[in-house]
Structure formats: structure tokens, C-alpha cells
Amino acid sequence: MFYESDRNFVADAGDLAEVLQRKARDHTKVMQVLATNPEIVDRVVGFHAQQAIEKWLMAALAGNEVRFRPCHDLDYLIDRLEPVAGTPPVARDEVAALTDYAAQQLDNAPPSSSALDRKATIELVDEIGTWAEAQV
Image (tube, rainbow, N blue to C red):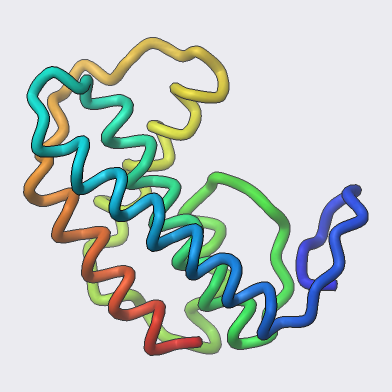
């Protein structure tokens, strides 16, 4: 079992990595489409960016047969991944800042006061995706 949780979710590492990659690709596509529409609020774009990166990191963890607990904390996922895959090729603080977008959706937290740089966010997700796919 690669998810450390109370849930009874069991999958072998390869199957789990494949499922997570598919989910990461889906969130990436949604984020890219939404980011081009100025009528979509930043928290929605940021949420899908966070989810894409979360799934990419989890896929890389599963592909490397590293146990992890399901969470939205991108710092935690990077910490688990670094010993086997090295440091992702992006600024860690930029990745970690997206964790707040998951919290906003899940906890109905107030939106961030700073605007999301959509172009930079798309590039960040793409870089993480390319790097994570190479780890699987």
C-alpha cells in the first residue's frame, strides 16, 4: 500500500503512478484552459495548478516506491521525494505557495490578497510535470 492513510486504498506502485499521472494531466489541462479566461478567479486557477503539482509529485513518489500520506502539502511531498529524485527544477517557495489554493477550496478560506501570475503558474506546472514524468 502506497497511501499511508486510514482509507483502505491499495494499489501497486506502477498502477498508482499511472493513475496519478492521468489525474495530473487532467488538472494541468483544466488549469491551462481556465488561466486564459480573465473571468475565472485566481483561486480556481490556483487550485487546479496546486492539484496538478500535487498529483505529479505523488506520481513520482509512487514511481519510486516511496510511501506517502495523501495530503495537499506540497512541501511535505517534495521532502519525501528529494531523497530519491533530487530537488525539483523550480523554486520551492513558488511551488509551496500553491498549497494555499487547496486550503482555500477545501476550507472556504478567504482568497489570497495577491494576484496569481497565471503565465508563471502555467510554466511552473509544466516544469514540474516534465520533471515528475522523468522520475516515474
